[in-house]
Image (tube, rainbow, N blue to C red; front, top):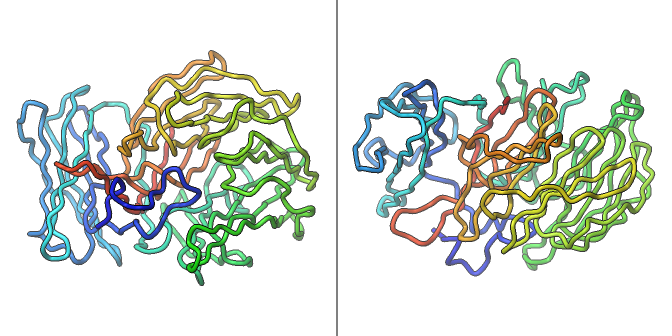
Length: 426
């Protein structure tokens, strides 16, 4: 086992997750979400090596009162199983401590801890997991070509598996099912970029490409790709000129006809790529970027700039006037690798890790009409960094990624891959 605080290489700040320190979880507390005024659903994920006698889950109040956990169902997947339990006798607003202890390597014992505050508000719906236990637990998510109404009825996620394989999976919302789909006909790479633009708000153009490659002989060397490809309602094309921004880990947001790119920990420069391939420099971010999270509301893009040691700043970009405006600072805990998304005219930001590598699960809502933030909910799932995120008019999807797990009686945090997937509909 490798602790984040004790490894020579950590993923923070970094351009990619260092997969050498990422371990699949032998047992994990996947989720806790309310199911009623006094009840919550708890899910434990177990790999096949874990026997029924090898793990134990407890829940207690701040005063030490132990609560009952009743088994409800077991769902068996190929590389793991999910044990679903019900937690009862809860009070809204009260915090509870859940501890999961388990044996691994047939000899060692590990205890993980998670705090849950009960609430009756639950904008989350647990969706089907995609069973996998290797490769990167993140990827690029985009609406599928058949999703012409832009509701997210079908989305596709492309993820890096290994140096010779990547996987594309389709999620069908109505059936709550994942399907294997053809991976892109493109040189294998990490960090694939995928997005959709609508020329004249009608013609759908799907863009994909860029990303980076690594070499096992030079693990700290990243070879950045600049190629992009587009698929139109009829036919497809290579995007030319290639991306002309700086090398680095890019973040982006889209409006109806434009995609805008910035570089984490890079210069403030920003580039725009039009639905018809025009590429141009746009007004730079008003300050030096740290790790950025983005979301879009209409023709306005938003950037939450996370700089170590500073409260995250929010900037709004008017894509039609090419003007940045400083907005209300994010009022929550300072963090890095937080994520942004939007639903129904509001922006959202949260998750990530605190300065001590503690995983965070709070989600905050931003109202552009009042320029105010408010805490809304906690993410019930497992991951807290590098999640796949999709924004839509009625719902958002969040899932996969990595969890920075808090260990009992240890200053370290364990980084493990996650496979749970959620709908967020506030």
